Length: 491
Image 1 (spheres, rainbow, N blue to C red):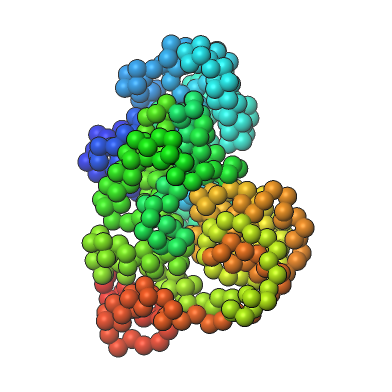
Image 2: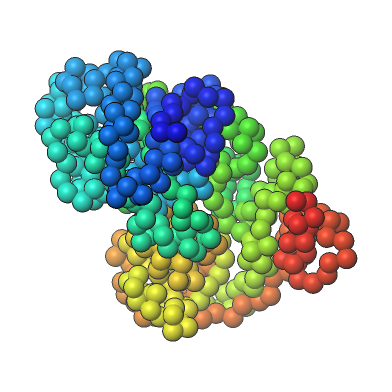
């Protein structure tokens, strides 16, 4: 199957359309505002790879027909100057791989289209900014400057996103997480909405509950006059969602209502990407949120307490590895009291780790291979840094917020992370032994003494442990072993 439209199917196969298109279809079915989109399936990706990384003529023909339909549905013109249609081209694997593959935004623009946008909106700066963003991203993803022909741009971007399935960073990520290399990525083509259009526009990320701590309160960030990549890349320091509530209360209320609906229907904490264009809310993504091990424990229990999950479903949500991470030792109180705090930032993934600060990804991998505990410190991270993050015991960044690439990937890896420490602050730490507390956002001098964790210190863990023991029967041993037995009993 080559191409499917979002919103025309009650249920889609995630393995076929990928997580991105699956979530768009689910949001449309829930009656939420989503820009029109179609998806090239993972079957097309596998065919693309099998045929020498080329798009077949029949696939190109279907894409052209779909773009004509997209023009009809939006009332805009692709490769035209009367109400120009720009699109995003996004990857979407069946299993979430945040930031591992490529995306191109604002596709379809050239100098003539830029001038048309400037005349249409009366804002030359917006039109120029949109063109600049596209050209920079296209060059990075595709590997050469964009053609002036939007159709050539589109086919080149689709091919580049398919190729990104086999990029070194994506391959390394799949190897670490045990994901099959044969699945392939889908490619979603979607009409653009513009968070950089005016002062009533912006972009944001919302978690329906806190993915760091497990608190019930919604948690997220908002960047006025930004586009989606600005927040998740970590290249900007966004505002808290309270800023959106203050300046656009109606939009904030709509967003919270959508979040409640998506969490209930998804039966899990949601990671939601959204854009506001001139005071109108658009939903762009909703998926199960990556969370810290500490949060995973608390969220499983709170989702049960709120009637969203059964006990068995709550147990299935927590892995033995997360249980093991939660019971690991933390900084001893007396050691913390005597320690020197070198730097503070925003906590992005709880946990404690000590090691040598390293600024380079390859050096981090080499030292880790030699048995050295390393802490990767970067201005901000991007997908090319993931292999170094995997090799490290903790991650530090100078800029970016708690929904940045560094934060999201560290939570999935279960590694302590502190972000937004300050521009230019980390270079002086190179080669130094430090201790990172991802729960408080502190970086301490030296290797600090740690104290053993305890089930009794964590009420949510104690609750889950009780459910697990009731299902594990005669299985005894460490708590992660009991959880594994309980999960097996439920299968």
